[in-house]
Image 1 (cartoon, helix red, strand yellow):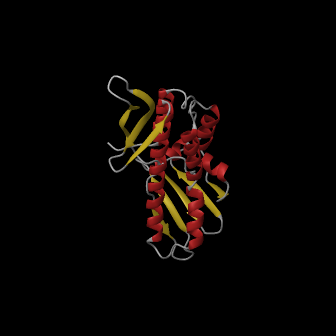
Image 2 (cartoon, rainbow, N blue to C red):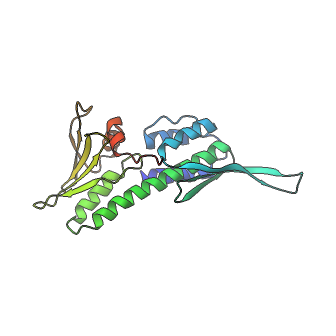
Length: 224
């Protein structure tokens, strides 16, 4: 996911105007219908759901020239989450918003992943193989995610990452370090059964993480 978003950001920085091709890439990467995000401000602002807790700290024209003869040569949009700021500069307002929001999304996703791996690195029982499998699977989570609890089996050193929702529902991922992961949504009448997949099955893993019940449990909540 990180590589896909970085590539889209690079493409956006080179655009001079709307691009249906880039919009299709954004929709494919996030598995959401963000149509017209490069052609309208409202469409671009729809992307804000990807970066909970971020807000617009600045939006305006880039201008230069003498008083009375100021010329606009582009637009700048800045987003902040009270910890850091990201900025999008582009020839059009929609592109500037797209850039800023996707950079905020990428920053939040990277912070989520770092927090998880800092947790795993702090326990010497977590094998290199399991860390590699976790990294491969986590890369397919579409949105920034909250830090799960990590439970390690003392016998086989398998690891379970478990997210708990506001109620009694949970979503867990079990890793044995052998190239596979098992997922289980635990709640009353879950919409999908437990599953087991290879850690490199990107498409099916993204679909599983995009499940609305799973997303509700694992997603990073917006800051109040």
